[in-house]
Image (cartoon, rainbow, N blue to C red; front, side):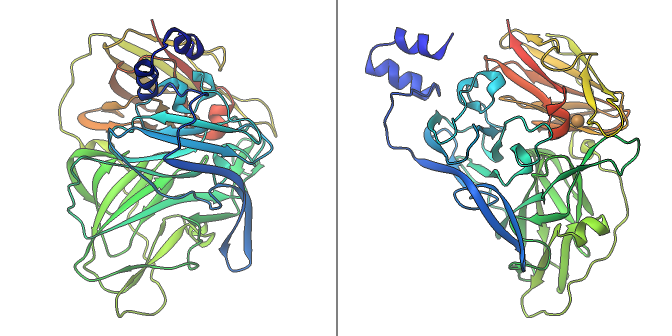
Length: 450
Ligand SMILES: [Cu+2]
């Protein structure tokens, strides 16, 4: 049902309140917002004299860390001070399509110079994020290439609190441009500068720690297109949550691998005093800024980096060893392929042989559980994302697993991944690769409730 139609059918204040609670934002609703997000041009000094001109939220890039309470209704006002229409997507939240922040789902755009209010009930709890969800195409000054992103932490009713300090780190690449230096001549996004939050490695404040402290790092890969591998020499990351959801088997690893849009919560016990670099394993990317200094109290000197073993990332080590029977709704096979568009062109992408908007929708019935079988027939990995729902990884590269719940999963090159989900949030829903160049060039489809 159209929002306007729905609102015209409901006359009473109680019904309007109900509509509001359901997240059906009313344009006539002049209630005071709980939060304001102002989209505008910003300049950030990622390193001394290295100024990045981009678009950000509330005068910064990334935007502020937003903390909301699970289940407590909120009204967010978005003011668009830029010259182009914008959208803010609440990544990982179970909200109605009308406020999710995706034009394809029917969320109205915030016009250039316009204002719009979104009301929704934040859930589920955990490390979520918010970001621009517009089409960029070849325009590297739009969407996730910009500074329009930030953490959205949904506080649970009861915080476990098994850590002494909390550090939010958002990884990003700046000033992207298209180049064909890699491989077959297709255009790829290239980044001359990187940062963790708004500073390049060596600029800005270090993360100051004390011996014996347990530091919870909430890490987000907010890069528009690139996967990252992050390590902290001399320390181990105990992975406690993936995409904001607690894992069944928390485990220690030497390095974290994250596709665009993925989040990892990891506890590090600070038991190796010194000055260290927490950074990208790739030397060039780290030199270009992707890292932060971790400094123990009363320690000084040049920050140390030691390369770690290149163990492959595997979600299943955090899951239960179990085979999940095929869900009642059945299996939806989704085959991903690249369609080479030519030298010095951006590749096109297909799902089951078709590019968006011509892709076939995934048709589901409310409250039924389904299995999506991703078959990556390409030489690149794809961080695929389902809006407004989360899914359980049930098979990863041939290995059965259970209990790892995510909203983005990286399907490695030439591999298959299976995820199960319950269709429990009716409304048009987007499914796409979160690599911005892939989603903009066909790698997208709709989940449609029938
Ligand atoms: Cu992709």
